[in-house]
Length: 146
Image (cartoon, rainbow, N blue to C red):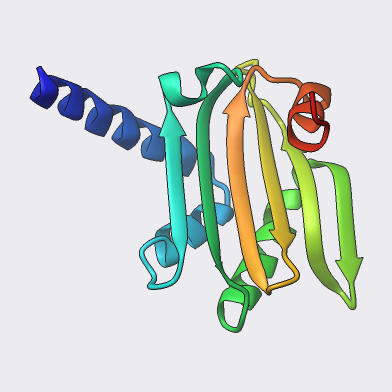
């Protein structure tokens, strides 16, 4: 039974990776290129783990924000945000310090988001999420305590 669960989880994760990479987002390059880099932390969630949040997929990476990573992230964000609706963005000295973008749903009625932030400790966090969670609900879950 445990092997069956493991097999199902592996299949679900591979489908998730295919679905995210099939969306022609440049940030996928960051996950692929730096996801296994020493010192980085990448998280992939799907299924029951995020169902309560009304999300179907979640992918994040946290890593040290220094060259060449910083240049790659900025270029990918600049590209992907052109097709997105900016909900919130902070740019300092020409560098995106934080951003919250909603991507077009591509006719699937699924909301897609990119979140990015450079912390005080110069750690960068990049998140991609999709699901039927509305932007306002996501803001409430992320920033407001219940």
